[in-house]
Length: 258
Image (cartoon, rainbow, N blue to C red; front, side, top):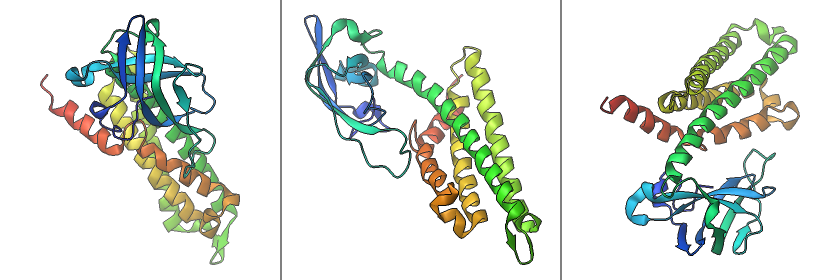
């Protein structure tokens, strides 16, 4: 749990604190948009243990659902992704045993960045799978739907749309595979993960929009299932680091001193 009302893409603005008192840490603050918070029993929570150190003062804690002073809010009503819950967390004088500190004090930001790097690759792979399904649906529809006296599959304009969808999907898959290979070699993979995440998520946006267009009015109706994917696809350019943050990371990696 990292995101807060005032700290989304900027973790340095985090306000949740953890103060050491004897053999415990006392947490105060709130988190928002926490995926699967509804059914979860154990949470990894980032909190400030030393504000003077900036992001190097962020630490990670294992918080169990039943800890006094810890509560999970109501499930948020979202545009898409209805298959998983998203809810806020609140900490009010929440006592966490010192042994629940995950790693050393001040290592929370590093741990979060490592998790985000792997998460970005996972999101990229999921985008590839979603594009696979969309292209398959479009192919099936184009082969049976007739307009202007011929199948949609015979209209060159739609053929080009389908071709562009496939190129975007394949490029995303190759970038994702490169990121996976980098991580499997034990390398940091910051650049590769951000490149894959940026391209794959934006490619999915283009592909799902084209899928709606190819299906026409049917693509806008729930029975085709395309509009569900359209809504689900929008979040991937936001969570695990927005597209703008990915561009910042990529540029930073390119410009840093070797």
